[in-house]
Every structure is written in C-alpha cells, then in structure tokens.
Length: 158
Image 1 (tube, rainbow, N blue to C red):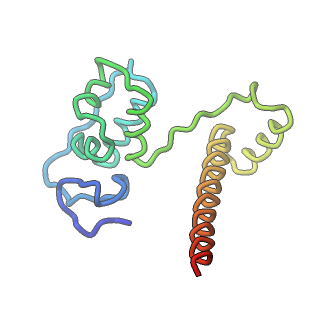
Image 2 (cartoon, rainbow, N blue to C red):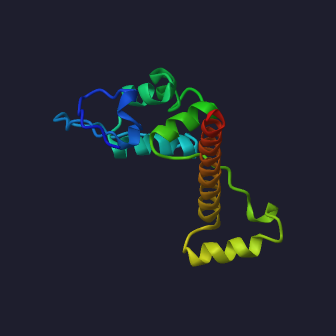
C-alpha cells in the first residue's frame, strides 16, 4: 500500500520503502558511481538506489543499517549478510541462494530445465521463483493454522 502522506522523509509507518513515493524533488540527483572492485550485490544495491531515487537516509531508516556503513561498501569494506539482505529487502529484492545445476538432485534437474525453458528464464530465475512460491505457501499454511487454532480456542470457550 502506497502511503498518501507524501513527505520528503521516509518513516517506517509508511510501509515498505520500495512502495513509498516521496514528493518530487527539484534538485538534480547525482549519478551513483560504483567502483569496478565492488561485489555484484553491492553494485545492485547502488544501482537500485539510483534507479528508485532512494536516499541513504531513507535506506537507513527502513533497513536499520547505518548510512556510514552503506557508504563504506563502495570502497572500504564489504557488507555482512544480514546488512546486505536488509538493504536489498527495502529495495524490493529477496536474497535467495540458488544451487548450481551440477549439485541439483538428478531427479529434479531435467524438470527444472524444462520449466525454465517454458518460462523463458534462466535456471536460477526459475529456482528463485520456486523458492519464493514455496515460502509464500508455507506462510499461508502457518497463517491458516493460526486462524484455525483461534477458532478452535473460541469454540472451546463456548
């Protein structure tokens, strides 16, 4: 849900950062420069920040990762897994490990190859879609189980 409160500064109460639309700024936005030595996921972070027009302050507020730490990813240090995942999440990305084709179980590798060709995607993209679908199904099952437990508890009281 996109917040109707279109202020300049992001607050967590507005919902996910990647859905929040700040007021249009009239100042010129700087192009994000990324050194060649940066890891690919760090390049993705800065590229998405530039594409979405996100500020360091907004990323810090939404992710809980300090602004100085994010800026230091450019040249001084490499992000930890939790920090990188938090920043990618607020930009609308999930960080999902994808197995190489060589380590996939032999019984599912041909099916996954067929599925990825039908979807016209790469195998990692197909795998990520499967993992995402499985995770959402698990969350839905857990929510349904909680609702059923609440109903059972309410019926037990009567």
